Length: 342
Image 1 (cartoon, rainbow, N blue to C red):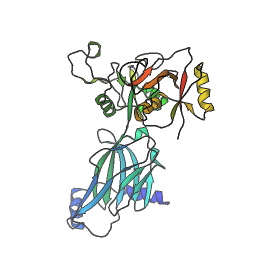
Image 2: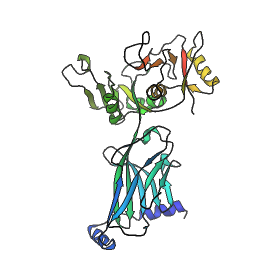
Image 3: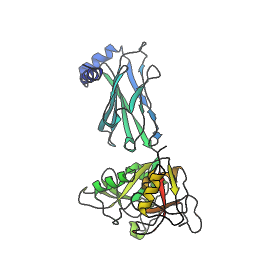
Image 4: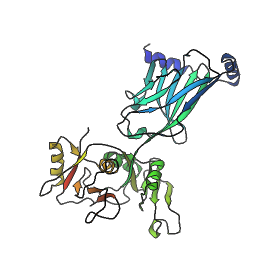
């Protein structure tokens, strides 16, 4: 068999030891204990970046020369059950799986290192990862949290409020260069000032909304500020808005003409500039991370017209920073926000 097939065959031989086998293992290790350690703090990265998830192991007491160990990385759900295999490795031979093929490899710069490198980080890479080290029948692991720096934004489709079931919410976020936000991302956005009185889907199928200023239409004036929750909803039947998450991106710029442009003219102008019309998530990311500030409205790919304000000023909307929206005008001539990969 090829090296990948050999690796999988060898990996498949491993199973959890019985109590008697574990006792024998103590004799084999001469009383040594295998210890696996990852970062206690979350590791932060951005969409499109490269990231290293640290993992090191050692023996107590030290067993001397380097041993032939096996390494397995898995991505976990929030409840720590396995979502998917990421990579397995024996020595210098490794195999990555699924979306991680071609993007994941083991970094072993030091004797007892088993760190995972992920290149071209994607939005859905956000989450918990388990580093598992196996030496014979000895098996230890630890978990590290990868979090993407990004921005949560509420999204309504052109046809209005509360029109999306869960699956449609997933699709509209993807269409806007984003994914459905998870609770941690929404909570972080709330802690940074997000206040939104319309309920929206999250990635786990729950429906929630963030309130900084309690008021009657938003759960009542007597409730403390926080995340209001409707709990899990039926993914096909119930309809709400969506909370989308987009990570930092470079490459958003603004184009205009003296007489403005229709939506179709705006798309063509971006193409003529070697770009494409920007999506909502890309504009939000440019506003937050690149401090894009433009008091001129522009078309976006979904047919909405918006503009980003970092420094509030007269004739540029409310007194707070944010991305302003003119909705989805059927007519009108505006500038356009374009996106070009760098």
